[in-house]
Amino acid sequence: MRSVQSILLPCLAGCLAAVACSPATSMSDPAPSAGDSRQAELDALVDSFAGGGGAPVTDERVLAAMRATPRHRFVPQEQQAGAYRDHALPIGHGQTISQPSLVAYMTQELKPAADDRVLEIGTGSGYQAAVLSPLVAKVFTIEIVEPLAQRAAAVLAELGYDNVKVRFGDGHLGWPEAAPFDAIIVTCAPDAVPPALVEQLREGGRMIVPVGPQNTVQELYLLEKRDGKVERRSILPVRFVPMTGGAVE
Image (cartoon, rainbow, N blue to C red):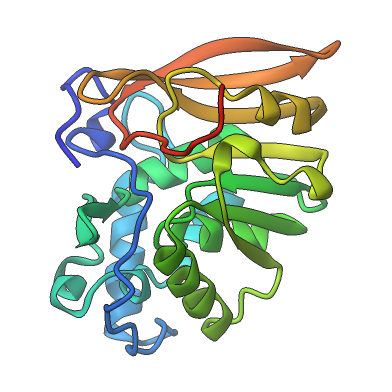
């Protein structure tokens, strides 16, 4: 993960999206709880970006989900000291876990509802899926690197996120048998929006997706499906790891 240009939101500068987690990582620390020093760190982190910046995170449901998600459980042991700082962290396999303020912002812009079925492309560490879990009815998440999918599934299950289903596979294809989805969030950058994801988004549904080639500043788009087509709005310049896979777009 490389730094994003300074035109990003103040709370998001220097962040890139994460899509992977190291399967060799120790994830044994307990989740934060009331009175836990880690919970105090987590609360301070969320307070640091709640309502601030040029595009503030103000959705109280999203902020509550961020406060309830033990980020240190999704990072390697050697990175846990910095788990509650607002920046990306390396987590193995040449990948990172996303900056929390970016996770919160993307989740807010997705406008998740309690009865939504959400598809995530790029499970990585499982952190984004964990944030979404208490906000929606069901999360379906796809990871193209099998060991990463296995690790994320194990951590999510251990922490009790029983409405999250993890699949090893190519995100370009989506999850057709579980479609249509009320919302889709993509945490890696394709060169163009995969047609299968548009097809699997329900009418009136929303998709958050970064688009653009690797090693360039990409655009984070909000797509809304109307009459079978998508209306696209650019909401943020970003730089994400590339979306890989063998499917033809």
